[in-house]
Image 1: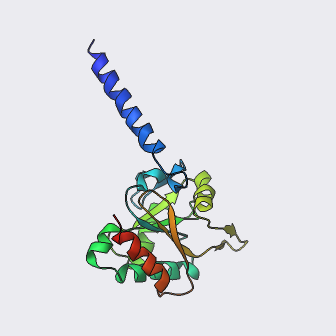
Image 2 (image 1 turned 90 degrees about the vertical axis):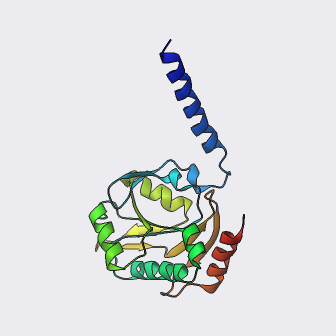
Image 3 (image 1 turned 120 degrees about the horizontal axis):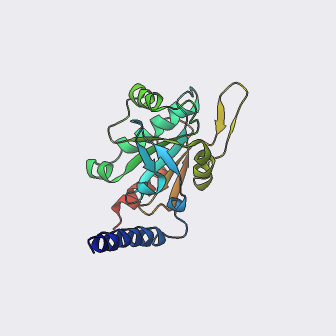
Length: 189
């Protein structure tokens, strides 16, 4: 009999988790069951990003061309927000290169680029990179020299994981139209 309350509790937890997943909008990127790890080596389920508006981009730490611009562009977006807006918006950088983007490499790139506290640097499992890139509409391919050609974009997700805006990164300055969309999303309920 002592097992019955525990069993019922476990069943309720499983049902609550399933209900939460089912309540996602159909176009949510968080339907994807992907695993990542953060810059401290802790596992982070892709779906656990749900619950907060986020700017997400894909990059790789060893890049010396567009990826530094992606980071600077995202920093520019964040700098133009009020302190309250900054607290509401998550910033997530996802690796395209899990073989080289170890937790130490991700911490080093964050430090080198002086990103603000609170940013998340995630490295997907090898078999989840393409899936995450697909839901974010990021195209990429490895080149013979070890570099990666990829879409340089910031993607604005609402708290439920729906794509609300995209901004092609062409330089370090934030796109004013994208910034307006970020502020509008943050001003909503």
